Length: 162
Ligand SMILES: NC(=O)c1ccc[n+]([C@@H]2O[C@H](COP(=O)([O-])OP(=O)(O)OC[C@H]3O[C@@H](n4cnc5c(N)ncnc54)[C@H](OP(=O)(O)O)[C@@H]3O)[C@@H](O)[C@H]2O)c1
Image 1 (tube, helix red, strand yellow):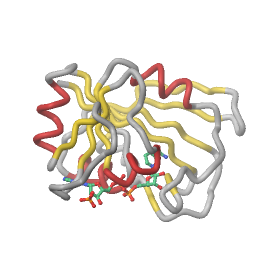
Image 2 (cartoon, helix red, strand yellow):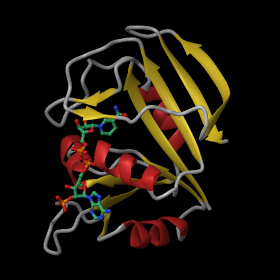
Image 3 (cartoon, helix red, strand yellow):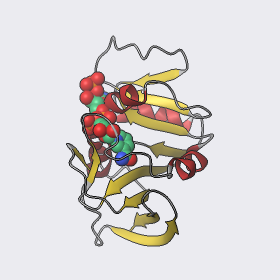
Image 4 (cartoon, helix red, strand yellow):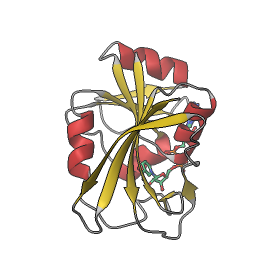
C-alpha cells in the first residue's frame, strides 16, 4: 500500500479558513482530480462537510469519532479510525490518498503513515485557522517540482520519505 497526501499550502503554511479553502480556486483542482481519480480518498469529517458531497469517481472515506454521524449520501464510507479507513481504502486500490484537513494530515504524519506527499505550493499568505506543518528536509526528499499557470501561478512538488 502507498499512502499519499495531497494538499495545497500557502507560503505561510495556511491550508484553510473557517472550514473553507483560504483562496479562490487557483486552477490546481484539475491536477488534484487527475491525481486522485479512481482512488480511495480519506478525509476528516470537517473537510467532507466543507465539500458537502462525495468526490465523483473516487471512493470517499470519512473519518469521524461520532458513531451516529450520517454523511447524507449512500456511497460514502465512514471510518472510526485510521486503521479502519486504510483497510477499507486498500480493498479498493493500493494507492490511497489522504486529502485533509489539518487534523487528519497532522495525525497521519505524526503516526508515520505517509509514504508520499504531493504538495501544491500556492505563493500566497492568507489569514487562516488550519495549517500544514513544515516539510522538514530531514524527513522528506523532493523528487519532482513543476510550475503551473493559474491565479496565481503555483508549483506542484512531490516528496518521498528521506
Ligand atoms: N488546502 C488543502 O489542500 C486542504 C485540503 C483539505 C482541507 N482543507 C482545509 O482544512 C480545514 C479542515 O481541517 P480540520 O483540521 O478543521 O478538520 P478535518 O481534519 O477535515 O476533520 C477533523 C475531524 O475528522 C475526524 N477525525 C480526525 N482524526 C480522526 C481519527 N483519527 N479517527 C476518527 N476521526 C477522526 C473528527 O471528526 P468528528 O469531530 O466528527 O469526530 C475531527 O473533528 C478546512 O479549512 C479545509 O478547507 C484544506
